[in-house]
Amino acid sequence: MEQKVSIAIDGPSGAGKSTIARRLAGELGYYYVDTGAIYRTVAYFFDLWGVAVKDIDAVTRYIDELTIGIEYDDEGVQHMIMNGMDVTDDIRTQDIAQKASVVSAYPVVREVLLDMQRQAARAHNVIMDGRDIGTVVLPKATVKIFLTASAEVRARRRAAELQAKGQKADYAKVLEQIRQRDHQDTHRAIAPLKQAKDAVKVDTTDMDIDQVVAAIRKIVDEKVGK
Ligand code: DC
Image (cartoon, rainbow, N blue to C red):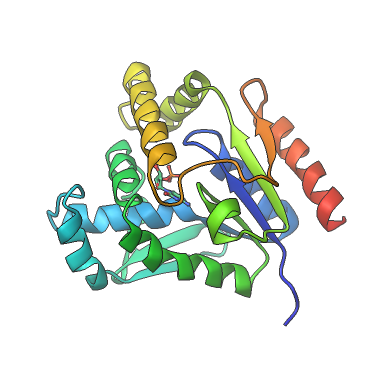
């Protein structure tokens, strides 16, 4: 089988991973796989069934009841299908983000999702974003980017994004949630958020989207060829 190209973009919440990855996937004609959405779908499933995500025993007991599907519409937008139901919009709240961060620390959850992510990269050229793509999911990824920015700038971007969707978002609260999630995601025992040794770090604190896309495109073109 022809070797597929995989571009791993890891980094903390609000660094701009999904916006950048979506744009690049469109430019390059690759599949965009948003792995955070998969963890959010797990969190949403337990939330919907009234299971506290802190209850690791219950999560372990019921995880097999969950079937996750990833589908793409004509515009290339990733849809998350939870037991046959499209939950793409339902998972985009701060509450579900926090809960996703909690369930993502459980080995049983990460194991279930690992294969699904690797399978996507075997089948297609992908741009995959998350926390452990370059370190664990695709250690042999063609290109690895570690995208970051100051917590303040990330909180400002995330608050604006939520407000644009009509959700209530107070900057101070979003900043606190981002700090909490950074701590959880970097300090967990399994697959913590960290820069892969062979990843290129891109700090987007003082960059706009076009600048970030151009910078990453340059790195990709050098590695993959135009
Ligand atoms: O990128 P996001 O905000 O949608 O991710 C939600 C949570 O999912 C994040 O706080 C940690 C977890 N996650 C993970 O552990 N590994 C990934 N590859 C992607 C997300």
